[in-house]
Amino acid sequence: MRKIFSWFFLFFCLFWTTLAQSDIKIISREEWWANESYRFLDSKEWEEILEKRKIEAEKEQNLTEAQLEKQKERIENRTKILKKLNTEFSKYRKTEEPIIQEDWKKLARPIELNKNITGIVVHHTASDYEDSYDGIRRIYKYHALGREWWDIWYNYIIWKDWEIFEGRAWGEKSVAAHDVWNNKWNIGISLIWNFSTEHASEVQIQSLKKLTKYLVKKYNINLNEKKYFHKACIDINCEHPLESFKEYPIIGHRDAWHTSCPGEELYHQLQTLKSELRKELWFIKYSQKSLEEKFKKQSHKSLFKLLLKLEKSAEKKSNATVDDIIFQLKNYLLQSTKADKLHENIKDFSEEKIKVKLSYPHKNFVEIKAGKQIFQINRQGKWFSINGGPYQKAVNIFWKNHEYLEISSWSRVPSWDSQKKYNDNKFRWNIIIYVKNNELVIVNELKINEYLKWLWEVSNSADTEKARTIIIAARSYAYWYMTQDKKFKREWYHASDDPDVFQKYLGYGLEERSPNINKVVDETKNLVILFDNKLIKPWYSSRTNWKTRSFRSYCLSNKNNLSTCRQLEKSYPYLQSVDDPASKWKSRLWHGVWISGRGAEHFAEHGWSAEMIIKYYLEWTNIGYLEKNFPN
Image (tube, rainbow, N blue to C red; front, side, top):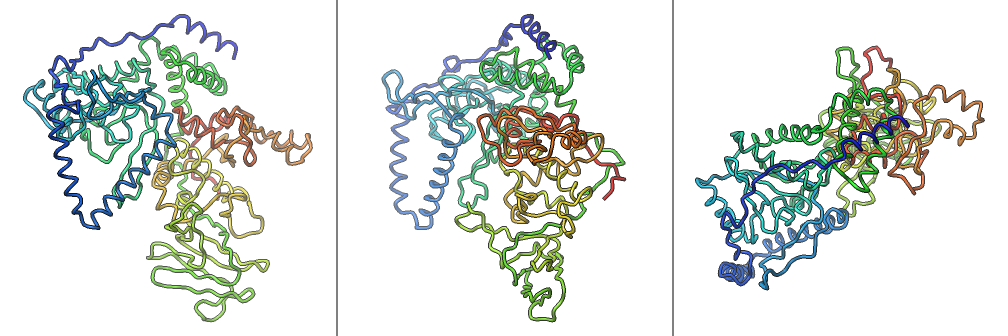
């Protein structure tokens, strides 16, 4: 480790220079003759707008009760969204003190300036103009007066040839109006034209590339670190009023709003441009090949330790050189830890059935709805009667044409659901009921892929790579107990819905409210964690107390002697103690070994892939596929 850090120190000394800004020509507002009076409240234009608003306000007094109720609900939804954003994401939404007057004149709207610029949103105007200067002035008038936003929505507008126009007054730090809920940390760039069916011209794309490169350098935007974005909907019928997620910092408008903007063709061109920008910005001074050769000589463990130190340094004081090395090191780790590629000999076990014991609370009565059918099941000792029929030893209700089976005698409404919209008592496939040791046992038998979609092991709003990490670990854990060991000795089932015993299984209802997790389960189909090409049982904790515990530490905590633990740990060489930076000053939850949920979230936010996260916590393991001959 000392050698690699010495090498990087020499590397810093050799290349410690700031990348020069691109030679870029931006046509200022003064040059395109912007009518600056549009901003001021005492202008004749705003006098007309205020008069029009007064008339509209009088008309609103005649709205029907239904219209008023709808308007009220939209306002309430908007208020809730803003409250959530300002509470949970306040540190990302900080602005300078609002400017309410300019040159001693009162502004129509206060001007806000972003404290931090962390991203760029690309749009298209969806319209065309014959002359660039006339076009930009028409856009300005429409946005400022027609839509009453006092200024252009975008910070920059790029004409069909190479011309780049300054948009909103007060520069790119001015909080614009181009992407609702995301304006307070992002710069908006719009390209003239409708790109739903046509590509942007080469010169227009080059201008976009030059402008984004200039802004990335100026504000030190890390292209390899995901930032927060939000999609919101204030209509009364919105299923998801606010969706918050993380994405790499240059996006198309559609990525963070319900729209087709910036058009299908430009959106695809933007993906190529982002890839080119990464290469040009982060590989200008350094040979990727020479760096990779040095990386190859180090173990993954050493490289992860180095990456942690560099990221910690960058958080305190970021600079181009450190970011360059972080990007290249991260890129190497992303590539070198990738999951094994699909091949013909892989085992597809996504359709295999897992049997889950449900924590049904009643002892002698069960009611199950299957479509229009209702099964009332009464227990008498070891026997069951269905709808008053003859007694039988067990009950097996199959899922056929109906959407799900509902255990209607079981109220399992989530504690947070004050409106009782959800009840986690719905299941697919089979419900089996029997008696053992004088206890009622209810088991749901279903496909493992659907089982994973109905696990509450990771939130639907979690970063995608954290979700991938937990879902892959959960699949490995569940399949281990389906095929390699019996968690519940001498029992018919494999699993339990009790999170203190197995995993928190909530059933079909969770699928309805977890679309992101459903997608992750499908995209990671059959992926598991392997050691020496064999399946392992990967535990994971919510958090640790700064470090995960090694197998020996965990073994000794269970009152085993040292000799026994030394012997057992030979089977778990990948279970070593590692730093868990996101859990510093926290108390340990559960056993504190293997993968940390809080740590997975922290690393995902720093651009780590699920493969990197798992490899960091479980050295010498890899994510891959089982061979067809893997035993059931």
